[in-house]
Length: 136
Image (tube, rainbow, N blue to C red; front, side, top):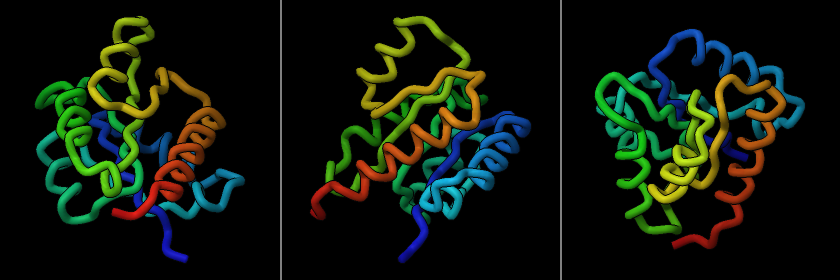
């Protein structure tokens, strides 16, 4: 079985370290064994999406070169059979921010700071959802 691909779009190094550590310690082998690709900008995320199409994108919304919702909207326009699941990660807990993320095409939302168990649970859920989609 091939490991799942996860693209982490996060500009803060400490947050990337925390995600990496949380996934490495996950009890769920599907989460623990993901191939994690880490990028810090929208530009590098777009390049990574082409070179290594992921199953799930963990997407920070506040990036140095723009708002992650721009990328979420671009991904939402892709063929549903091949597009990755997108989970917004943000420090904003405002209901309007959550609504904007879902309207932009995000499949899930996780508030920062989050506990490792919540990250693992939401990632496992979206890995399963992606795997259950019918092939194009």
